Length: 89
Image: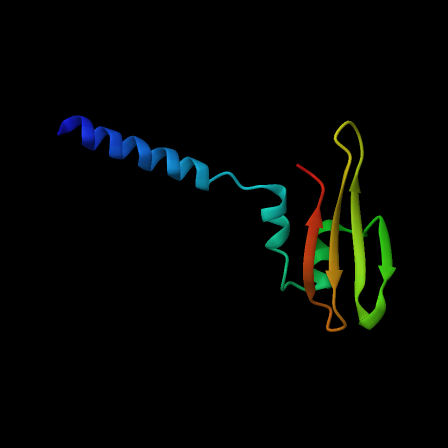
């Protein structure tokens, strides 16, 4: 009986640890719903800006170096972030 309790506790700890593994995409997704002004105040000027149809603006931040990657946000006409994507790990 004691080994079953220990086993259950071990499984609980492992599941808790797996739940704590937050990816870069998870952190990016927390920006959805925020404003572009908040993003700009936090991240600074983007490396690239583009306008798409329907009043959607796309801003991209680039990292340089060995693990170079992009972080891209789509912003609607009301200045709200509606999507966030990255190829960063």
